Amino acid sequence: MVIDEFTYLISGNKAIPSILQKVWDEKLKNTGLMLVLCGSYNGMMETEVLGYQAPLYGRRTASTLLHPLNLPSSSLFFPCYAADEQFLAWSVLGGMPYYLCTFDDQQDLFTNIRQQILNSQSGTLYSEPRLLLMEELREPRNYFSILRAIAQGRTRLDEITQASGVGEVNSVARYLDILQQMHLITRRIPATESQPEKSKKGLYQIDDHFLRFWFRYVHPNQSGLDLGLSEAILEQRIRPDLDHFAATAFEEAAQTYIARLAQMGRLNFLPEHIGGWWDRDAEIDVLAISQSERAALVGECKWSVNPIGTNILVLQRKVDLQCGQKSEFGFTMRAISLVIAPLIVGNAL
Image (cartoon, rainbow, N blue to C red; front, top):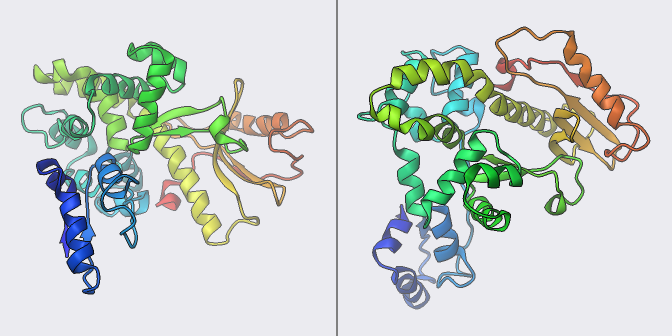
């Protein structure tokens, strides 16, 4: 028996989990029935169904958090697009099947963006994030300000505090913690950090690609979109900036690709961490590292409309700088693997 959108049922009657607990304990648990509870509101599922204080706590056989589709799976929604177009569609929509189904690959990407996202009258996705988050959040205005700040490139706690205008650092930190619990944002840390929870190098990032796109381009321009200026906003603010926006998703795709190579045994070591690395002076896009094997793979990936020149070899200098005796990597690397950008999207697919 499958009950879909169980959170809607709880919203209508808060006693439902207690009623279900009583029925399960007294009548159903020995009948061989498999009961599957599904819900799209993560916060409510975790507190009302999975939480320690929840009536159903301790009765689950298993639980699964369904993640968005990855780039290879998402690309299958757009067989008529070239590989770079499939990637750009994924960078805009993410891996939610419902979002992917709204785009028609018989039309170009920007036409789809204008019709499905920017059209305030008939756009299927125009109000989707607002409606979704207002169901989950008690103070949507403050959270929206924080998410907008992150989407516009303010990724450090002090930057988010200043840009959002929500309050002091401690208040913003609490909001960020709740957004992390809801799986809406991630606190990224360099792959070399041995104690990530204590790292002062954390950068906040919106997890879902479409939320990232919406808070970067739709939320700040809603007044203009409501006035019917979607074409102007598309041409002046989105089209010139889209490749820059997609760069973050391209780094994610590159890191996932390296993880797939590791899973297939195609790296000559077993990485313990795969991510990026940065400090005040330099940044490495892809770092797969194994402290136990004293080995690492270092990569640079760039999504750009411009050809990549020899200046990309600055990666070698970054590695030389960080991989000496005082390296954060914890060892001197005698040999490294370079992934020279751009990483071929076809391989990532």
